[in-house]
Amino acid sequence: MQLKLLIVPSLIIISIILIIGFIKPDYDTLKIKRATLVQKETEAANVATIIANVKQLNASLDADQETESFILRYYPDSIDQGRVIDAFNFLALQSGLVITSVELKELPPVAIEEAIQNVPMTSLQGGATDPSLAGSEIPPVPQYQAPRPRSYTALVKARGSYENVKGFVERMMRLDRIHGMKNFSVGLNEEALRTIDAGEAVSEEAASELVVMFETRFDYLPAQKMVNALHVPVFEKGSLDFAAAKEAMTRATSAVPDLDKGQTGKPNPFQ
Image 1: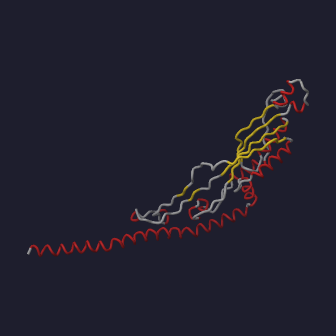
Image 2: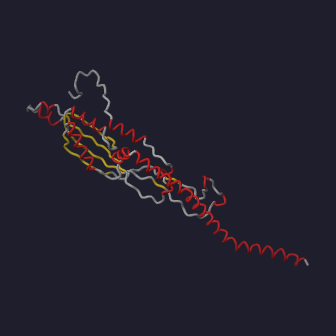
Image 3: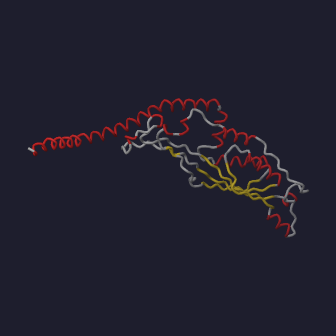
């Protein structure tokens, strides 16, 4: 009698175990598909916003083509060594400086911190997270990696008078091309000084001539293909911040302020 009483509960338990065994694989599949569906719904909800933002960004650029053109010149998307050499020659011609050599050297990719935007795998509309989807094997969301700038340097040697050097440096300060002066040296023409020490005559111009050497770094930002435009930070807003570009434009078009050289009694520190 007792055995008969135990058979019924045992059969029920076995039935439940069998049912769970059959249902669980389907449940896991449904769980993964649900997580994938949530991700796709989130992306679909963002598409309209991204498209609207892109249209606004294009309109913003079209409305300020002067700034857009300046940005493309100031921070180009390809190496422009020929343009830089032409700029050096033009500035030297304007200031009366004589360039004796220009050595260009391309640098390896700049090691910068990668800007990566990670979107949670189980994120819902509005940033909420469904805890029931934790651990689900959902397709990974493409990550955005910021473009890496590239650089090259120009080592320039030149000679000229103090006023020539001063004029060249002032014009370099207003160059409409992003650059960074790494090293700068200026001094008297040692060759002319040795000639004078040897008792030979040199012209007054040669005696006061200065020799200049400086190294400047030029950056450029190559275009980068995007795997998924939905996760690019610039498309998350419908406006562009031109503040930095406007500041660079002002610096490139404004006169370099005069520095007070003090009461030296000399027209330049090399006399």
